[in-house]
Image (tube, rainbow, N blue to C red):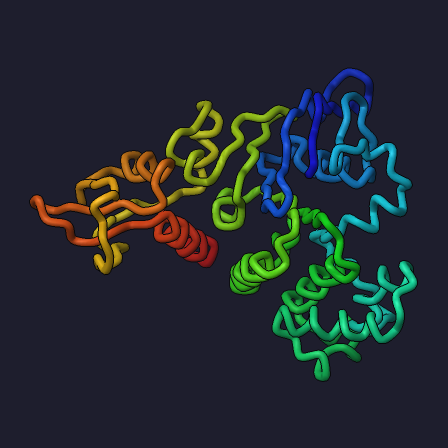
Length: 314
């Protein structure tokens, strides 16, 4: 879907903000770019829709170089959601959502139908909210509108640049859940920038950790937690302050055949658990030679998500 081929960006001709990036993002994937400030994650995101030009290399979408697309065609097929919500204050919510479909000359009936279904999709009653102005909505509601405005013209790709970082912890957590639910429905290719490792672990199918414009590690949340590729990645994960995991508190009762499952001791440490999850969706857990339950990847990620909420709320 999106292919980076030896992509670099330098603003002064010397120091590379993005350095020789090679990666591929699959269709329908939720792909997260993460790293410390100045690592090149936002620059990488903005090069996809040509808000920032490449210095070297190529980015291809469906095999075609982005430089070969007319700029309006490229950006029409890419939705964009910012931290600064940037809704037009003088327009109603309905008018804000309808901007790109109107530019694409959709029929009014089609636009109205699209606005209604998108608002319902994120839990905002169209009859209640579509005629309101942005100032009449909460921050979380405004950001929901920002997300569905990016979806209005049914783009193939959604770029999201730290869209929830300015929100309070409760709104942020709710929007993360909403986005995961929404992605199951729309199955778009999402490229998401964050500086929060817990948010990345919760949302991403794969995570790309950047440092000084280069890839430190690229993999699933389970792979990265189980086997940090570099000391920097290990330190970055540990800086999130993940609390100890007590396996017995997260087990699911055995309700089906477990003969094919890998077996772990209830006393297995965090690394042993995560290492098992790299190759298994679910494992059986044993105590004193007796199976006492099963543990899944979903259980692990739910634990990480709850832990993140608790730490942010402190």
